[in-house]
Length: 364
View: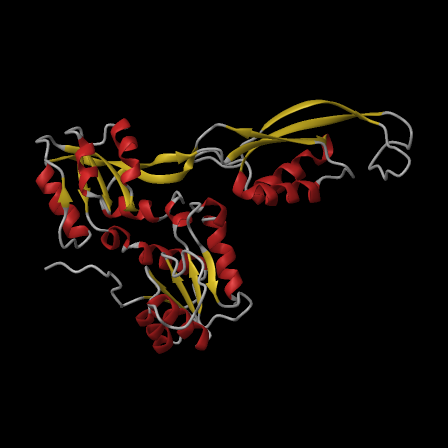
């Protein structure tokens, strides 16, 4: 199996187009055409991770955080980033990063956090906007089912927990083939009227090209009539952060203790406790302070994230408890998530979870 096969599957779940503008997801080092021996999964690519990959015979590293965020002008080994890249290239080890696109994936980083906390009815805290469109296509009746199924298979027609969703309406289409046309039916220079079906499906912009290709390939007409309309609708299955509900209320200190034990936190930095039970929990793996307003809007009792700055804690305004559990701590189970995803899809493929702790922060 080649590296590109692993990449294709991961990006079918968490497409690169869903990453944040500042990010650098994707294949950073290596040749996607290389055959894979085995893979090592980690949060951060470091020299120690490369050493571990060499020891375990892995030639693909899948990391959550990109080793390169901005361009490198020189690679001389002066920084850990340069040394890591040099060692990877020297040992023919590919490095692939799946960062904010995995954060924004409905069953990605935050979903794993929610499961670990035992939360129910998990939902996206800040659903993505401007990532949906409506595709309408006109098809002769006897090909309508073929075209519709092809679009579904390519990723169209998903609405929340439902798939294969469409709206269909019958009508009459007219056309006149011109001199150089090669019509499926009708004659050159004559107007034809055909019983057709208008098929409308919802499509994520990330899969629009694939859906259009499937639609055109399965359509019998030489020239396909279709419309694409951008939608303002929010995509409830893509976006930042999540929230969920505890099966039953729990007091604040007991819940913080549960969080501390679950994520093995050295410390939890938090705002004043409000002396009320915890039921609704909002959270975001990594740096999530930008989502506090969303947590307040859904009236969460607590917001769990990382990398909070001193003055940002004041923004709780005694309306919500802010709990900073640490960046590494909040994302540490991403390795388990990725391992489970790959093992389920490629059961005979060897996947290793790193045994190296890459957290640069220690607690005294």
